[in-house]
Length: 216
Length: 215
Ligand SMILES: Nc1ncnc2c1ncn2[C@@H]1O[C@H](COP(=O)(O)OP(=O)(O)O)[C@@H](O)[C@H]1O
Ligand SMILES: [Mg+2]
Image: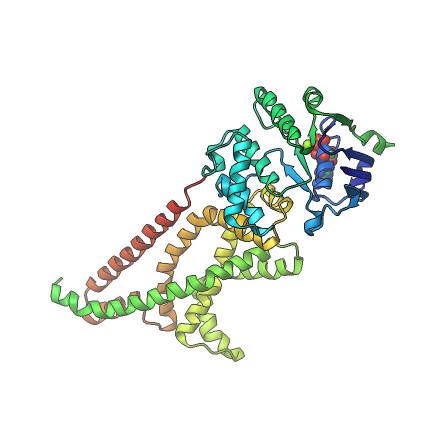
């Protein structure tokens, strides 16, 4: 279970998130919805340590962790970026196995075997030797998911997983997320698409822009 | 243009070409790593480092290489730094080309999408792992054409060492031309430069091909 308590984040005095509380229960999907500019990406970037929160507490299974920490015990969050950010010069296999071999010091063959399993589960069997530019958007997204899962995160976060894809792929993404949920993955999905959120989420958290408050 | 005359002067031309090649290789061996390190400094967040390196690049690119050669060989001894002719040439060339390479690499580094660093970061790769495995391979591909241009320039720029009295390829040709009152040696010099540049172009093309496996 991921808990975030009293998160506050501002950019040069402009408050984006204030007194934010988020709970994602094990094996559930939490959707965070809100209009563009509400601070959804910022929230995700705080959770993943890409931005430093002004204040707030981060707990995983009741244990406090530091999203910006470099300790392996801080390594609990997996991320699927909005435009995936795959490494273009690495094959699908190398994209997935790079961090497990370099960071977790996993044996190369072991990491590759695991990558093969992940690819098979995600419907990408036999695509390991391709390069990102040879994949469709949906395939890239699944490679990004495999790359995150290979680090065994306790929770997987997505930023707008439908926005970089063809609208008719939305159903596919829903199935993908629900499939991972069935496998026991805890997931946090940021989206501005309420209908999509309703289809995947156990719980929905709405965020709204604080700009009106700022003006007071 | 008799064959016997050509075979007579070729050894001295080859001797000159050998100095040209040595200067070429030592310059590359020194200036490419220097360029990498300086470019990392140029893109760092530490302002004093950036100022110093910006000044260095400005100085090297803002003055003729010929002038730099003269300063290193004739100027530095005034403050007690004495180089042999050849060392002075290598030193000046490394400093000069290091600056050009640094600027090229800086451009390459800045064209790497921030998302690449962020991906690496959430995967917990360290700074140096990110530089080595993610950044440098992509930068190499981006900068190859510009680096190739500089490499070809270097083959020809090496002829500037005549100014400090080094016997390179061009000088060897000049000596023979004024001694024998014929343009044949210089014609041969031109052909040798063309062959050297041709080989470089071919090799650079091969390297570029090796990096064309992704877009
Ligand atoms: N690095 C930043 N510096 C300053 N302002 C930022 C930065 N990142 C985001 N913002 C601002 O924070 C607000 C929320 O942005 P964001 O989290 O991207 O919203 P959302 O993802 O919900 O569309 C926006 O007004 C945006 O301009
Ligand atoms: Mg966003």
